[in-house]
Image (cartoon, rainbow, N blue to C red; front, side, top):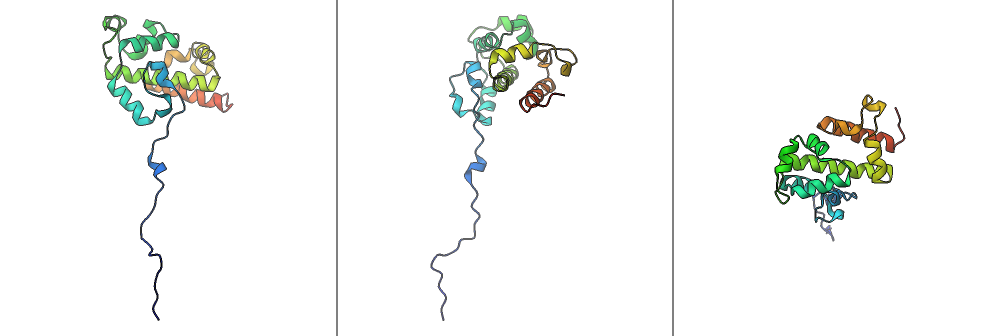
Length: 164
């Protein structure tokens, strides 16, 4: 008696490819940076690429205008002197370390807009002193990565209705 297998079984594991594709962000923070990149295709790898590539000073100033920061506040967040920032030509590409902070700033304000429902409400909140931040405005903590984390975490608590 012979036993024939009609459909040979392969000994391989099939993993869904979707697990290896980075999640596309639904947030258009590219728009805040004045980038030409489509808002629907912003993955984590795109964010890293954007920060490494940098962008012109005029994009930084456009970001500052949209999120209502003056040049001094922007310079403090980016860890650059106000005078040095002013010395850059409008089309000059800003160094990677400054571009990275600007990307984080754009991501934060986009996330704030999602949580508060409008960027204007978030801009008001981020400049208003809060007990959570020891009586200081959240924007005053954005000069450090730990400060960014604190503000992002607080946005998560607000989104989920956890007011401590």
